[in-house]
Image (cartoon, rainbow, N blue to C red; front, side, top):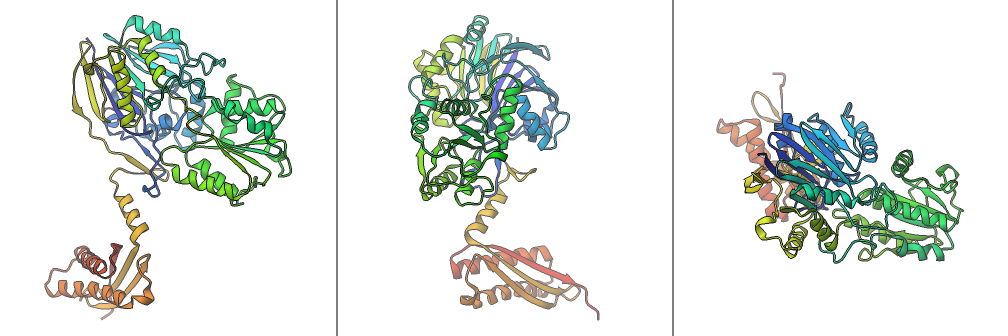
Length: 554
């Protein structure tokens, strides 16, 4: 009988950073490798990614990484992972195109990417794996089923039930679910982001009905902000532009690359003659839709740059209709508010789409019920969401007749062990830490860098330097003191003089007591100076003492 372990390295009790693992005997299958956007207090951090330590330590047992779709919260950490372990990547054609560009940009070569179809079956290391297409905000999304001797372990990915979707690249094949249920489902890992939403997400995920009136009324240009990975809605905007006889300008080059991929794969073609190249755009054109897109906080920064007239292509005009159709996601609230505030200053018509009416393309309560009803899993595991969403998802399973012992609300790193088709225990943990990505490759899991940045941003820094004779330890230069962001120097000369005196006295005392050592002396001075500055100013700046020892001619 197979021994099965299910656990998450990210994605539980948080928005983003999704990474789930299914172990069947000695084989590890990784599902997703995503990022989470930093919170406002995490200064200088570009993204937060899962802790890969467990996978690196067991790299010989990792047989596959599945990326279910092309969103950053499930794929953006993949370059960081494949730089450390070489493992086959399985994903659908559109996501493969996106990943190849990203990996190339990150300097990753010879990654092993297998293009699989959304509804397919194949073996990896002797274990049968199946994919099934689901409706998401980007094309080529799929869920995954990994076969064990006691039934499938099924991961839904993001999904909604929408019977009106005509585009095959977005369509859900419900017949796949019934086929899986016939063979038995040991555990269902279902997303939780939309679990607080009553009813079905469809048809409220569509944006056309919310913005079409602006297309009817607008006399000047229409500017609309959207996340470039929300391909479903971008196609809706393209179709509206075509319906109302407006040219469309794609402001973001990354979106244009994505649309080229979509056209190449035959998923969607922009109507002939509709697109307006940037080279032919000018500010006097009125009958045009400008689609301003980006990812994360970048879209808000981009619009802010246009609003303050620092953009080379666009400049807002009072006659513009500006539609904000990119609701803030966690970690981007400050930039979103700043952007909207700047737009109102332009005097244009600003229209923010109500996020309560524009549902994200995540499974609502009835969608989740239908998935449970069709698959009939033995165990139910809410994934992908904040803790309140995980609990709400678990309560949906309770309402469907599942007992508490069949529902697992796990923490990141918590291992659910199944033996002979039954939950054996869930008390073991893998120790995990968030990994902060600062710049391109600088990774920090300790948080000390962030603490230093916070200190610098709030209480400033004092640098105090002194030069001494290497042999005699006598002071021959300084002390020199530089203060930034602490106090106004002209009003506090006495403080700066005393800071220098403290460093000098630390050296004199250490030499007299025959215990002088450069590093320990600097640490002693830092502690004394910190206490003194705190007493005088009420601040705790970063103190940076420097003792320079030089040889002198006798």
